Image 1 (cartoon, rainbow, N blue to C red):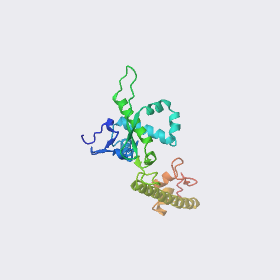
Image 2: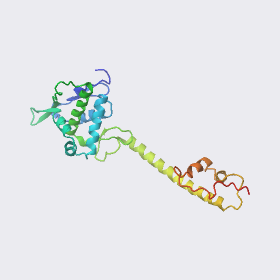
Image 3: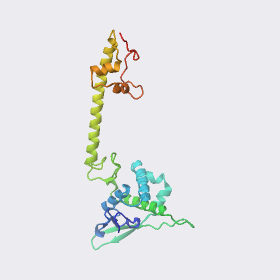
Image 4: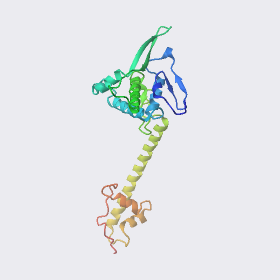
Length: 253
């Protein structure tokens, strides 16, 4: 199989990774859906496998499912045609083994198109997404995480408290961004206080110098530039800094 090419019809009972290597499920341990299936579902959601149409349709289904709680009964009763489609999307075969147990083998169901209508390629791929969603709901669905708030990828939860970010890298980067933003806001607040105090000094002057108040403040505190002051006193997008009482006055003395 060419690298990166994945046949949608071969999703069941095996999956193909990004390098084209096929992974087959062991029958003696097979359940309706396994972690291996969930890994492939994540790849489709992240557009690392399968077609664009399959990924988009599966993402839509997973998004609606998550928004419901997830509460599958709530989701299905709100969309009866989808419920009917899902119910017919897979055929389950109870298969016995030479051990004390059995396994359930899921195969794509036969959903006949309407009379006089042949399925398009897009419809076929969207039908594959429906079957993958079926797989998700009968497997370890609670282990599906995502989308990650930072990178947008879906992932498999590795522990009970693994809920928000796909991994430590994204979590650490977000924490660093939050910390940096907090420090910038604190520095800005201190700067506004210093600028406000200098503006009060300007207002208290009996004789104003020939330069305008912004340059005067900058000379008093070089970290406060005229450009920053223009932004800070903007009534819509500023930082809440009040300009001098008579801003337009240069007061040449």
